[in-house]
Length: 281
Ligand code: CO
Image (cartoon, rainbow, N blue to C red; front, side, top):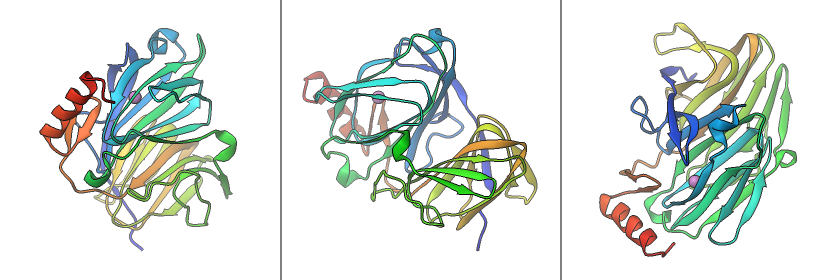
């Protein structure tokens, strides 16, 4: 068994997106432009409505998937194909934008805490122009595995003890876990050796080895890129911990970004802008 060590620690960068939402960009910023197949990770957490109330008015996407996971609060989603719904605390929306969708993502609350993540996952060239699709699950439909000192919510993928998340995406075969550990609790989980993986600390702290075999403490809002290996092994600090463990199969294809479009070539991005401007989404 080879245990994955920490290759790089990333601190998120304050950013503003949508109509003026304050967020922290963790993947998709100079320190970590992408971690194939992951293109972007935004974290948002605020109890000040001024930080989030403007939301994300209608905007397009093409060529990848957006995964919205709400820890606290409510977010209303609406698209140009007539789909509409509210993602509530503990719920997930896995949207395959594919060939194109225009949607809005607006807080469904005037006050209180809004906390969550949006992750962008790439699609392989042959699947970038598929029809848009959704996989949406509320809290009750996300299985929670209890272990000694740990609670593991499984959004997608399968844990080493066989708990399987409701979302399916064979193209990148992602694992997306939300793990809560008691103070000092140990956590061990198998990972596909060839998949890229990261940890993101939501609360508390995590202790694990870095590339030089030094014990590293990761704190709140830090992301750790993991080295290759077939398992992750770590321990919660004295305050306990809550973190995301995310892994996926790298696509190893060229990435051409243009705002809300992520294609393989600059020409395809230009085509996306042109299709959108002509109302062909
Ligand atoms: Co969007």
